[in-house]
Image 1 (cartoon, helix red, strand yellow):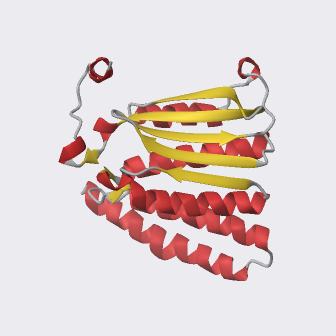
Image 2 (tube, rainbow, N blue to C red):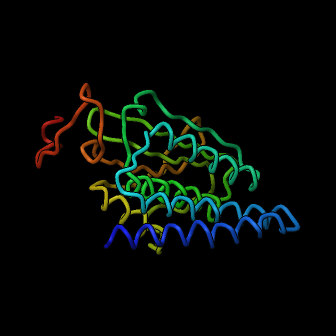
Length: 212
């Protein structure tokens, strides 16, 4: 019964809401409106995908989708971009619910930089260490010291999304080539994902200690 209801919701979202958004996209008279509709349509597609249990995609595949969205948003804001995704992500299978959380973290971190810091460049890096998936967003905008940040809904949502994947987030103000940068990083345990036998990590209550 639950699966039937999910399928009904997916059909309604796809056939009604997505169709209406496509109509708005064709009718939009200027690029800012078209950009907003494209973003909304992309968000809707991500939500529809998250409702499909059992359908996994590789981290590499998802990265291509996220990169396209990242480049489009930064281009519209006149911000330079850099995207780094290391080898090994073809071996990481991500289910729909996980994909939605990761995408939301990436989008929110980029949005925070664009909205609050006025950066000239934003860099996104997705990489793996022995036990974690690491997602980083680095920008060279103007930031207050971390102790003066006011915790808002965006920061809370980033922490909550990471917790739902048994992960953690943090922010750092560092210097790169003499320029201050803000680095948002999310660390998600690899045991949350389906991975190839060669790199398989079993969920273990003391996994962090085993890495030492």
